[in-house]
Amino acid sequence: MSQAWPGGGGLLPGGPPLPPYQPPKPSSGAGRALKLALLIGLPLVVLGMGAIGGFAYLLFKSTVGPRDAAHAFLRDARKGDWDAAYDRMSPGYQDRVSRGDFEADIEADAPDAAESDDATFHSTSISGSVACLSGSLSPSNSAVFVQVNAKGNGWVIERFGSQPTPVCAHR
Image (cartoon, rainbow, N blue to C red; front, side):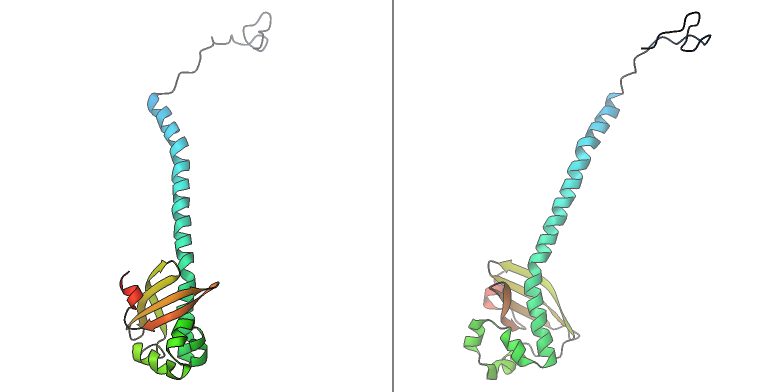
């Protein structure tokens, strides 16, 4: 602490005397509790929101591959590029349906596919290496169901039609 000047009571010569020292009053219990709650609670809220956002991002990211495969198939069908569309089908499908019967098979199962402008998939369910998509084609608003299987680092179409596949119907 500072020493007072001789002849004066304060810190400056001839200045007023210093008031006696008084320790600060303790804060009220409610104010301390609020500060503590904010100190602990705010970081927990931020961490929780980050975890929820991260989970939503991962969930969205995991459905991108199957939806992209279905949209790519539809783009090929709309362009009339049935060879490219057939190449997007799974080996199992290609074993069951020849290239010659492919266009007729798709048109029988999903007559609006080639004439659609777009598809909106309202539901995507992934279990293991199988993804099931359901949605609608526009502008006809007709239902579309797609079973997509993982193959290597990508996805291939197993079934495409206006009815759920047997594998996807139970999900």
